[in-house]
Image 1 (spheres, rainbow, N blue to C red):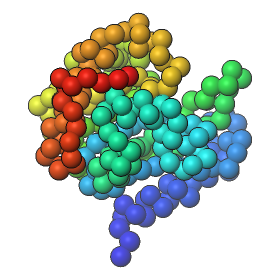
Image 2 (tube, one colour):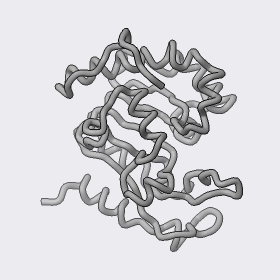
Image 3 (tube, rainbow, N blue to C red):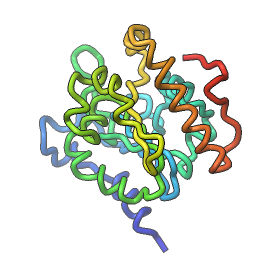
Length: 223
């Protein structure tokens, strides 16, 4: 029997709203291809921005250099990262939104999050760690007082946001795009203070779930 979750994911993957009936702005300039990774027993949820052009082409999230960097930050190989039973990847917009005049990605489509985001998260009751990547995810999930000053302001408040004792913990992250390499260099505390705490949390979660070895915070990492 098809579960409620399976029916919902099937509806998400069949959605053509931003091309056929957009609520905001112009129509999606290409055929929709919603990209989502999720399963009801996932323990980590990565709330991302929207698929890029490569993820749109592959149908798989983070199949680009930003995915390499994100997996390095978290200490996951591809086998675990792409296991929906371990990690859900739920973007604010499920389809690649297209490019702006400078060649960057357009913002996630607003109608997508308004229609699907809460419905999908409701079907993920076992999430223990929410990773909010970028401004759009952080603005949607966090109080306005925590998102003042954009991503930098939010990341600087990570200790207010992250509660290690909580059943469902939340950690903000910058987008792992290589376009953000300058930001990471200007904010070295991200790698020296925030990432070790996050990796310790993930290591404990991996041990409890039997996901195999992950280096602890004392072991060297690249970025």
